[in-house]
Length: 359
Image 1: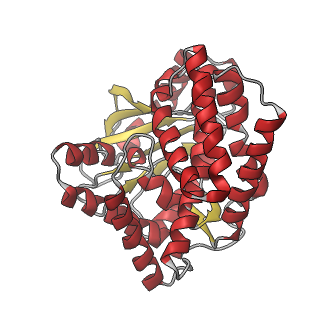
Image 2: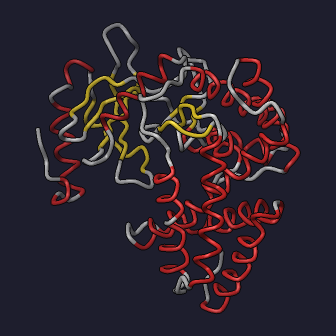
Image 3: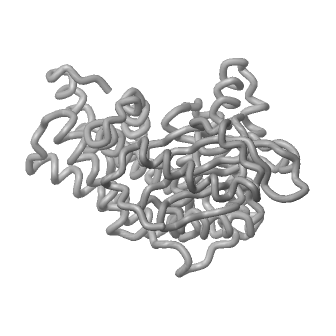
């Protein structure tokens, strides 16, 4: 079943998804009348929840129907789900898939997200609850990293790293702020990018999820009590060992004080060493690697959120730009080689005020 998604309207995609689900309705006791939006994300994927059951003998609950129009990554989702499951990480089970059409039927990990639970813990001033959830997530990450091997996932190489960071000058500086990337600005960016790429490439390389953050983690419930349930992993690559740790703690939707961050970073570092992962034996150097890796991600996100707004018509991520500016400035000011980039951020903030934009 091959579709031309670029010519399909949203309604057409939903109609085709419903027809596809109808073909599997008997096997999974699908209740098509209950089909309702579950969530969407920054890509063109959409998720729908409906009544059904995973297999004969399992209790009736809900399943998730995924609309992922090509070139969205259904094949990669299935491949990486198997890798994660083999590593002992709780992920949705793929029940049916049509790669050409871009449809999947998967088990439902529920509606209780890490993001909601952690926001609740912050509101209730319950650091023990937050720490327990974060430690569970870091333990799951270690299990995943321990299964790493080369030539299985795409490499997060120099070209990949640079391509991500180039989103910032194109979409944040050029499109959002309306500023030309002049020779001086380009020089600061090039020197910063070179430092961050060298640091990332010098680290041990492992399986890397790329979007390992509370929004993509779910609170597990019986019969799968292991936390967390992991979603949105189809973009996994083979890359720097600190990336997913930085992604988890320096997130778009939550900020932590340094004491809590450091506690979690030390927990991961000690557990990873004990498990035999090749983290740097010196915590100070490990922390520097992690901070520089986080800066690479934050530079990318500044451009990415602007692209999602201007190109894809999804403005709600723009309100999170100030958080990433704060992350980036804090790291750049802490390390002498990165201070020119901190000064550039100050200059860009002045430009934003001139043209009426805010971070």
